[in-house]
Figure 1 (cartoon, rainbow, N blue to C red):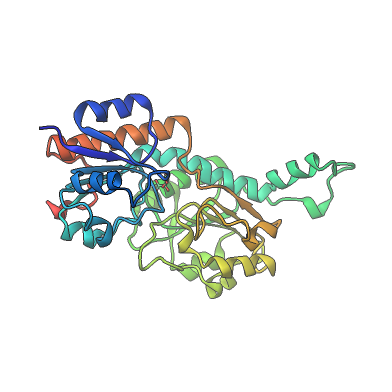
Figure 2: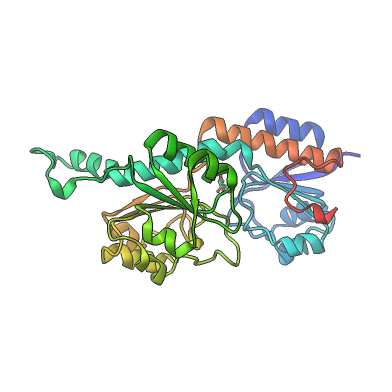
Length: 326
Ligand code: 8YV
């Protein structure tokens, strides 16, 4: 008997076809009315859900509507919108798509760092505005990247891919703050593990690249920002809520730090009344860390593999976030 699966994101046709061949597939998306009988019926009959929506909370309230649910496959590495305790209580397996997005996301985060340091977008906008009328003067100068000190908050797969780019490509001195030590990056790239405050005080570039958890929510506060060098640049490629965004906005307004490059925000999409939109010393990016044709295809394929393995073959892949569920 085919199992019932809900797909709540757009994925490449051939991957959707794989799901439709294996399961009774229902498509639900932002336009679907959550109060409609069809929506409620689909949830009530669902054995599996697959998709990527950071705004959808998969918690006790959601799982109360899905009594048959056994597997959730998120098309993302992050799963902060899933309540792991509730998944355990309801016996739902969760799979994610880590490895396939590592290099693509590292490319975007390093792009954000370089474009913020060299003010690439700002200067391109200056030309578009017809303001390139003479040689660029010091008020539009950027700062060097090569040979500087870069500090990572987090040392997971994406951070390690960034360490390689920074050390091998830009002769940067690497520092990191992480719960556990990583001898591989220390030996291979001479990375030094320090306390959070020491990384913030010594780094010219601080890169936030750790998961959002109860411990890391607002890890970066006004006090932490005040520890950074006035010449320093802050990059966030993880989750908006790791940084107190209001404190960051004030730090940028008051030049406590030089600039920031942000791919993630406390509320996404960024509301149009956000004071960040009025600042020149912040580069804004619409959560596109993994948004390349190749990477998003690989993420969708990985998520479909995960769902078939967990729900059809009853043999979850290595991307099983909560094996304690059994
Ligand atoms: C996702 C991401 O595309 O994987 C993650 O954790 O943040 C991105 O790669 C995004 O979560 C989809 O909404």
